[in-house]
Length: 290
Image 1: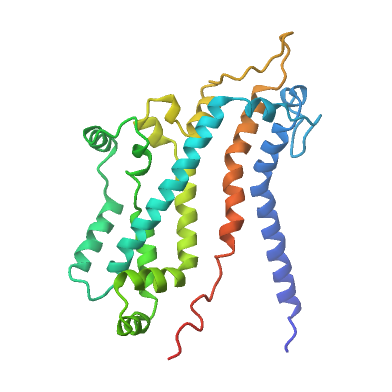
Image 2: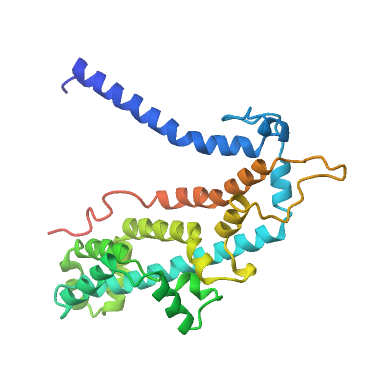
């Protein structure tokens, strides 16, 4: 085995240092918000908080978790993420499978229409008028149906399906399997890395979306968590009482905002490790012996 030269060792060490520096830079805003959410009112208003809490306290989280509007918005976001992602993945798989068949007639025309939607959209006003005519305004369906399928994610999954050897489904057809069986028992199990990645893409998109809710929803009970967060940070709208009976501040408004931001990002941080195990290479290795 050849040993690495001095130049290669220096290059590797420099790469590690640069990666560590960039990693710390991306971690700094998160640590600052976390520290601010756990610091006292005096420390926050005097700008003494950096990346660790000053005068540790959890009053902001206690006040936040007593707010009914927060739970209602959290529930809307959670339901939207679960149902919306399930609908996205079902439609994406059902459309990607036939488009991956090279024998499908009109396949090029359909793909051209899919790509066309990536380049040109109807625009904000036509989309609003369309949902209005469909009677979807101020309904939960307005949050999930307009984004039911992503053209970009569809193309990604179609390309992944095309990489699966055709000999697999040919042998399955010889055993009497139909397209439904081939899709659910061969293509989807072999495409778990791609499906897990797209599931994460869709879930993050649903969890972070707020503009469509601002456009299509007027009912406060249907506002997702991101709209609750936007109203709190941008418009300073909150029903949470930040002072005690003496009129003294229990927490600073910035502390409450930081606590709300942390509560909104934690679900995605918790979800990621469960999908991370599917992000592996070589699932296809050994599946076919030719």
